Length: 372
Ligand SMILES: [Zn+2]
Image 1 (cartoon, rainbow, N blue to C red):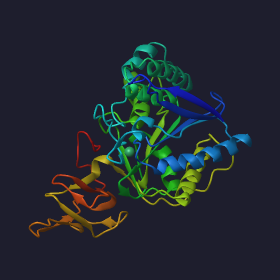
Image 2: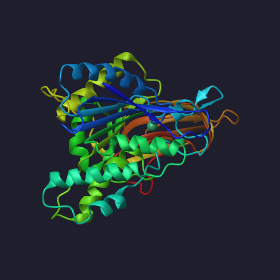
Image 3: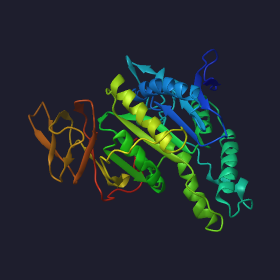
Image 4: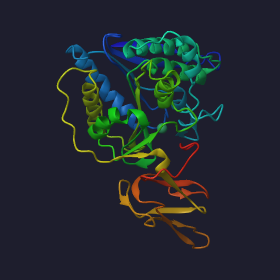
């Protein structure tokens, strides 16, 4: 295992922030996978999964079983992890700018087109190598003026040429679920089964440039841009994995998740050995545009009547919203048939707040599909 230290740009003289990446295997020898934990810094389950992965991957490396390269970023957001407001870590938004740490990643499409135009051919693997080199150059050239810019540039640089990118997040409360780009779903489906995902949400573009899509969506767009004479596969499988809820931090869960990720890397040929048998699917893939939020019509105390993971029907009462001054009780109903997969962890919400989400089969939303 090799540890690389990446010094981020200093916002304040005397205050330095160090990002670390752990490197296993041999670069360039086989497929590359990058895994990172807690880009939203207060989403802790991924930090514990990364902790278990570190020792497992070191052991696999010692046995000579890593066929390609695996990069593990055990703390993807040291800026956010250090932000404390009134005793709580604020890990989702950078305090200085208000920006979500998992949005606004650079779109390298135009830069790559400029670099590869006229050089692509009929050989898909040649095209992939050429595009990966262009992506590396373009990522290295992203302008950065502060710590947040340099965090985004560094993380993208570690993942942009990978075959597999696994970004470990969690929800407030929820069952394990995934987000990924539509065209790579057949390659993600084994991961969904191995890790026991109970919802898998697909989108070609979900809006505001999250990290996973900065890595993966450039490929189908390049394929469409250059046409069939120059074959370009969807060469980056990038997945945002929501490791249940923010309090679901336990060795047993993290060890099981780490094992599932290792099994997936074996299934993808990054680790040698017979691939684990795939368990039955616990969900079908559904459009992210079919994930429908339930919002609070007024402020109040949330009392849940159903647990996350429940299969629910349109009109089913999932929670009560109690307005304690007037005594008003408003039932919160499922807007659709689907899986009740995530909910707010706080039990008092202001008017307009998103309280729950249900994943259904029909794409009913458009525009920006992610929460802020
Ligand atoms: Zn997150």
